[in-house]
View (cartoon, rainbow, N blue to C red):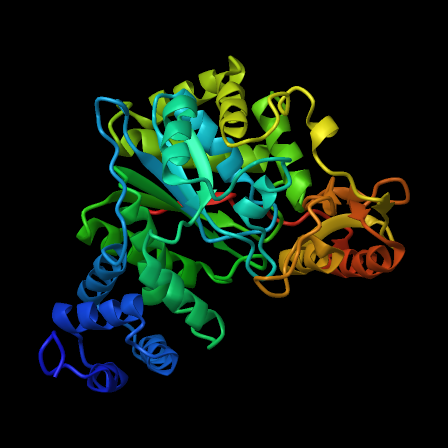
Length: 442
């Protein structure tokens, strides 16, 4: 007998294992056990595996999301202090994806408040927190008071998940990570949305990556994830929308922590790249429209273009960095503060031609091999290493035009990464059809 009645964890797990639908009480019981440590790691792993194979209905997923959200603290943003909508975006991860660093200050400059809780790199994909930690002094784990004060002053703050926000999700994710159950759409959905709901958002936009550099390699799988996220989010009372973003080439021309921060600063100060711009603008348009700040997508784009051109977005980024302990002059002199690699040199192809295809995952793994990513969550990161000036699809490559600029800490790592970069590019004699950068989910 437990305080929940005659529910036994193994019986709930058995029910899901056999493909039956769990009710709210059973899901609440399991999540409560996760949060209190009453559910063993073996039982949590068995539950995750049962969901992995049997799936969940939308109703079950809504219940799981709410239970994970309610396992810890929920943030509140009083309207007398925060007089704009509370918004955020979430990306499923990609190579060269520095959109958060650009979009958050743009939204803040447009009048929204962005309390963005981000994660570290996973596998071949870069993590927003790892990028920000390349900035000297930047605190990715501030206390709640500093977090809220930064959001108030700068309009945005990008930090890591705190221990008291959806703690049951943190425990379940750690177990999923070592039991091959990460790639479950219901569990991915509940994990993402529980943290966003705990952050007290009014609206959320999702950037679901698809292609060789994404966890979802096919459009069907990515669309299913996006549609599930929207259905569950709406069921849990959150306004949200989604786009699919092509990840068959890096999003930005840089991959690596300090290099992506430098790239983002370049964007904010007037040197934006077309692929990044299209995704940033699309996500920003969706959010401004969702929370009622504009009447149309066209009005939203006009607003976003204005905060870029007049420098206000860059000012909000600098304010966020300074509030969280970073240098006050980062925007003006990023090269003075961001770490630089010991070895910087071009990587040339052994032949010439036009880039027909890119194994984006291989480029992400090259950054990991250089030391810019983690083999495990405890491994240290070299924030200076990575790849810049990455050749895009349909660009001409030759004796004088490199595939990328390599940033490495030592010669051994440089040579290994060079081979990986060369193998990631397939050259041809003619250009290939270009898919759209992003697809909106209606």
